[in-house]
Length: 116
Image (cartoon, rainbow, N blue to C red; front, side, top):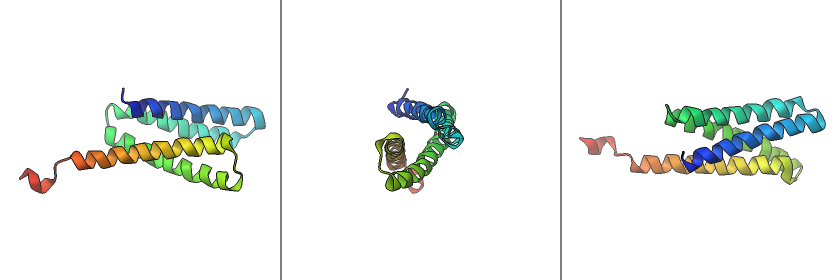
């Protein structure tokens, strides 16, 4: 299993765990639904990677970017490490790693005009 898939599994599990923690500690259904959905989608992209790697990586990048936007804005309003800082940090790592992988794959792919 590629290292990125391992990271994405950990990211997804942590997001689900943070959603459960938010629900149990503060009664936040929104945290449970939002973080649980993000975690489930990210874990789903790991499973999808085996049959459709490109859509899986695109979905993962979009979800991590959306999560970064949401958690980043909350982090600016209330600068605390947990949960917003952790979620934003994990989202940055996921988005950058997925983006770098895409760019490297594009660089290594032969161009249409060179193929003849």
